[in-house]
Length: 189
Image (tube, rainbow, N blue to C red; front, side, top):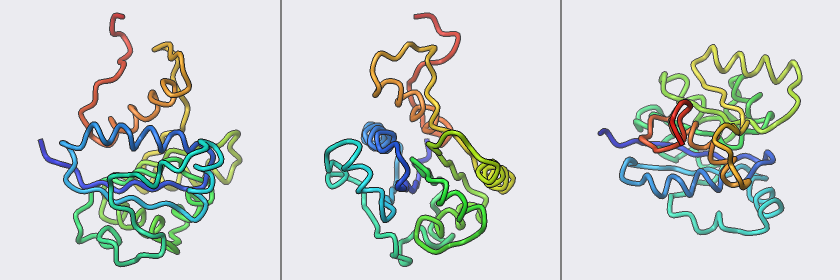
């Protein structure tokens, strides 16, 4: 198995629990990871503190880069990072990516991933969508990105919010190419 070089970005969209569960799951998948870089947007930490009432993002075991650090390895296509997950992804971040605006490390890294024809996975947590959102999703999809809305599945009968969130995160990690054990439709209980 080839180990992955992955970028994780967290924006200020509501849904910090998705990022928290993503980091927890990545801890269990460390043997599948060669290198990880983490970026928090300007408001991501504030939303995390407000929604989750903790500062556990301070205890991540993955290297974290400042939003204005254009010397981060993944700011260049020569670094070999092959996957970027933005979770949760704000509509503002999505719009800047769709427009090709690389004004911070998140949007620059997304631009690099797309230009290198690597895997970009955006996890928007917004409802309802307006036409601008939908067109931005279309643009990113046509450029090779994957839009995976933070829409939990319920056929596995999750009995906690965390388990419902895990249905989305397991899907995202599967899309990123991780070997992960999760509920599969058609499996017997």
